[in-house]
Amino acid sequence: MSDKAKTEVKIERVKEEDIPKLVDLYLRAYKGLEEYAYTHPKDVESYMRWLLNRDPEGFLVAKVNGKIVGFVAGDANWYSRREKKRVGAIHEIVVDPEYQGMGIGTRLMEEILNYFKKKGLDTAELWVGDENYRAINFYKRFGFQERGRYNYWIRMTKSLE
Ligand SMILES: CC(C)(COP(=O)(O)OP(=O)(O)OC[C@H]1O[C@@H](n2cnc3c(N)ncnc32)[C@H](O)[C@@H]1OP(=O)(O)O)[C@@H](O)C(=O)NCCC(=O)NCCS
Image (cartoon, rainbow, N blue to C red; front, side, top):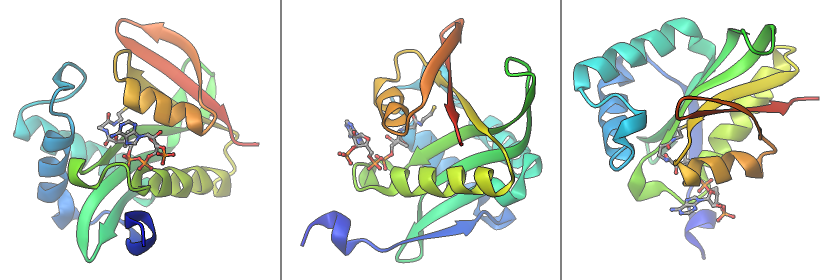
């Protein structure tokens, strides 16, 4: 049996007490991509609290055997200045390096896109580092397309209709 078939992934909403684990996971997952990430644990913690405040319903963890192995921070309240309307923003998606390539990122992405649709949104938007090729390819698989650049960030959107 493949790893993918063996692994049962549960998706749950983030709880306040999960934050220290999310900080640790974030710092490990962004090793080698530091130019696009917060690197100080206190800054990451503040960022996690900001994400939870933005949209607690859209901040989800993936668990395997009760352990948090990934998260997605979706935001159904985001006003996109570029789109000039409210969109579903994916502020963050991160999978524990030891669990990458097993379909967990895909599960998180599917959940958040469904959540945005349920909220009646017609567009998803995200920004990704211009040399974060793995993430860019990951997003393209879901139909995200490049819509422009700002410094070393690429803006991508996807229609939800
Ligand atoms: C991007 C990320 C969330 C993907 O999560 P994941 O759980 O590994 O994704 P999946 O296992 O669902 O893989 C989906 C596809 O991504 C690609 N992919 C995943 N892991 C990969 C790896 N190690 N090397 C190359 N491609 C990979 C593959 O195309 C894969 O397709 P496949 O299932 O047909 O092989 C994860 O790599 C990550 O946490 N990266 C670091 C943090 C980051 O950059 N986040 C995005 C910020 S904008």
